[in-house]
Image (cartoon, rainbow, N blue to C red; front, side):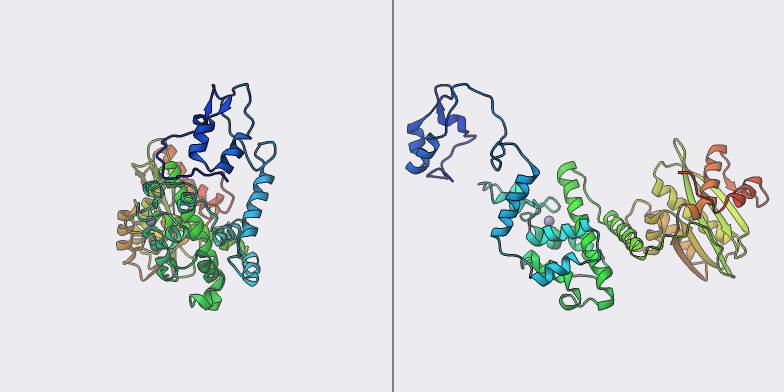
Length: 416
Ligand SMILES: [Zn+2]
């Protein structure tokens, strides 16, 4: 490829057009001689210049017609990969393609192993620029954005790895080729001392975490959306839960079921109105009888905040019903997770509400909070919608017609 003789020449905004004279109809031969070695200059002069002057256009050099096609891009990429030595052994490749993961995640691991995601460090190789700013990590604005940096070394990534069920210290891998980290994911029991029975769980967690980091990086670069580590942990947990559900093929029960004897169940849900939310709770005993119900108007349009208030209303109402051992059920995964892991999610926008919930939870002998399907939470959803349209807030009498009607509807699929 032709290169200028002296690459340090200061030629700001120099374009091919600057090498042309006579309105773009001939090459400026003496300038070519100044800038290129004679062989390159001769080759450039052989490029035919049309006597018609056209405006600039993009051309895809990898296809004869200059038009982009996925096929030609694929051929180009394959040639490039074929010329590089494989980052993984044949055994590791077959292990990767045999992982029990969605194909999309396996494909991501493949791209990570080859280090072909367009991180800034890769792009910088093609541009002669001494200005490091555009190439720095978009998360921490620190070092150049390499795969190892954003996936393992950056503070954002470290928080995610450390908060995993296997608190991982990724420092040891930062200085190694990134493919070593992929090998560690493929063989975590050998490389990371992950118990053999947890390997599959770990691999899913690792793939989804890296998928999320790359997604957050793109949101930040292209839409200036700053990621919140807390929100990321919630999203990762919920994505993992969805994938694992697909593994076990056991969907959440679509039908509400009464709790075991001696236990009380408190369902919570929220309905959104035009400018406020309505929290609702239905408290049931082990015979399936409703022993308490309440609604509350919440001045928010934020569903998550509304759900958190509904959970607070549920524990509060369960206390007044004299519950001893409590099962709290809702269909909002983020709120359920926040209550399950009170400390981890401090700082989340409904953390104050979750803190108040934790105070009430102390009054039960035992408690647990579970995510249920929307249809299993149908009675409470109906109550919230009814209260939102009739503007009825507060404790709902046990004998009221609305409670009789939701009791009958219970178990049916909810309207979407
Ligand atoms: Zn960083």
